[in-house]
Length: 225
Image (cartoon, rainbow, N blue to C red; front, side, top):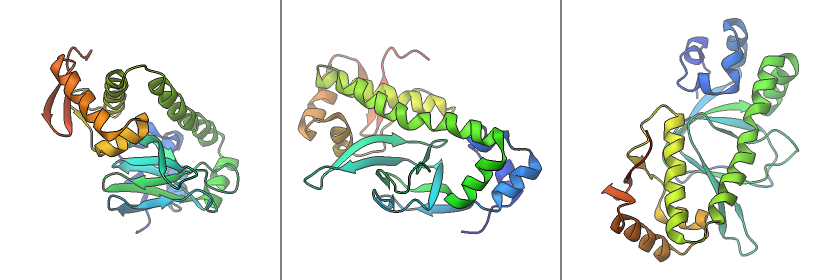
């Protein structure tokens, strides 16, 4: 929980992918004085819907799931976030969702008051940040597009392809696809029963759409590299 040094921000593995990429060394140092690294184990709730917004987060490493609770108190997963994504939108006074670690995760945490100060005085970071906020809308679009598919097999295959594209965005190979999240979370996201998802994986393997390296490592056959 030590404060960043400017050199850490300069060599941040995701800096080129996020809004602070536009900052010069002097402004980056000023920005880094207000940012902290924090590492969390898996299954830790980072923020909760309805709580006052006090910080926003950039993902340095690991995966975060974003969800809301239905009337019965059950999770409805909206999406999965990867390194380079941010969460904890600064608009309004309260968080609108829950964010929980799927794996161990390292986050860059910035107090909201300090962040708003940087937005107000730096047009470059403000423009980059508002570009990044479209990610929240992208999560909703991805989710809707997958849910509209007719068959469970197509929904699961589209989900695997979506994660493959996330890997590619981070500079990783599109194959194999690493499904770190548990199958129950995949089922929740897709609006399917767990056993339906399991059968869909079996059918996709049988028709040679995918191959399984192991339980959480999938090869998309005939994938475009």
